[in-house]
Image (tube, rainbow, N blue to C red; front, side, top):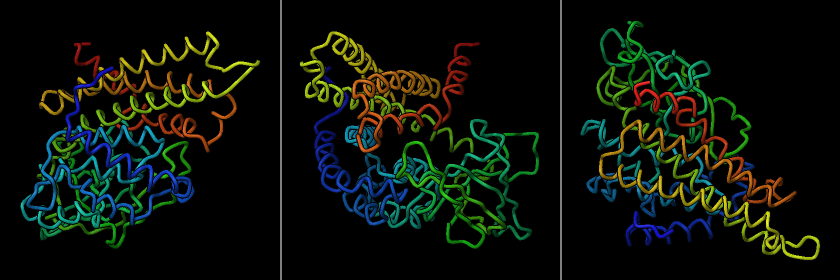
Length: 383
């Protein structure tokens, strides 16, 4: 279907990203997956191309671009090739947070390095006992008697980009009053070189195998009082701006993975023969791919409408949740059918369709599970 959501500047950017992926990512991607992370030099390369500075004001070296459409282009092009930019995904999701919730002094300290990739960032929210229930986290930070610093203690799980991050935003409790599950939470910007910060062993994930997903432990870590984002106790206000964008990004990725799967399956069945004729000639193949294409068209329409709404400042948290829910749940059916059309080849991790299938599975968990999305949507319906 013809798309009107992207303008010429987005398509020019798309050509740059596609060329980068084809020449500098695809040839070495298997090595990245084996290592479990992207080489740090590649982040500097993204910084040099201006990719990290899209949402950062020009005075700090960025491009000052508003909205999410450039990020959507990146997500679509990575899915098209069956790759990711590893832990950079977390960094790319945080410009608005750093711009909107930092002081002028913090901006001067952090944003120039953020743009170049010399200061990589991540966010640590999930804990072993607190995933979807963000308000249930136990990591805590106590303000020192002289008010100069916090002492942070706790454990975080599934920190995307955590091993290579220089600065991690840690959601934690800074109030001893446990009766207010939300009001006592803050976001601390933690220097990962600080004594007491430990990166745990990287889990062997089903997909997203180059994404540097780690656990982190904080033991009596001293965090300067001036490294709080926003005001103490404002973590939920900061996160409220992160979640809709994060969920929209996951929805875009799910749509793009489904579209890529249909393209890969179509190419494969045209070249594969069975019983003396191309697999594409069988009615079952045609019907399966027709159904998949119809679903992709619907996904595209939902995603494009959400992108326009987000850039217009009109996408609500409930609409973002509904978009993520629909796109991630619908995409998995497309990916499964397209993998099936590849036969045994689809079960080999060397093939992009298998990587897409494995990577996509996280989309119904990360950014809030499908069950949480259903709860949010139902609540918006007065249920």
